Amino acid sequence: MNIKFSCKHCGYKMNSDKKNAGKRAECPNCNCIIVIPKNSSDIPVIYEDSFFKSEKLDGLFDSFMDEYGDSVLHQKLKKEKNKIVLQLEIKTDFMRSQLIWLFYETLEDGEEWLSATSIIGEISNTDELAQIMGSANKLTLCPTYSLTVSDNCAARLVHSRRIENIDSKAFYDMTINLAQVADIIEQETFGIDRT
Image 1: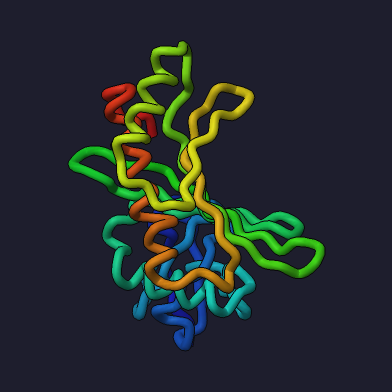
Image 2: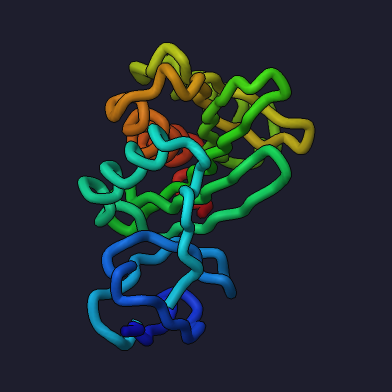
């Protein structure tokens, strides 16, 4: 028996076998991650394997969404050759949010990595750079967070780990905690929410 439903993000109409109810899937139209409803009205592309192609990472993501799903305002998935990118918009404070990009990558030697990035803002002068550096130094950052500035002057907070070294605490650090730290730096530097 099939369940008929629509993507809550773009309205795309889909259907799925009832046995998939409660599973996470990707909308074939907007690539947002959705949960297949138990009853008709709400339809996606079912992943037979997994989102990340890593059983461990998929399990961590499922547990994360079960516990912190209310803090995730939006999700979007993009697949490339050896890389999967999951964009999460995470609620950080009243009326504020921060975008996090999770990059899952398998290197040529087979080693699997997950990197998380949040853009703090575009730096337009040295005063803003000094403010960002000062804010970052005041915070108790996770030892593996890095503050970088790209060629286009975007300040980013980055956190990378081998998949084998990721547990639920590390996944939290790469998502909720990274978003909160990036948002504090953004708020202290620019005063406004730039997402």
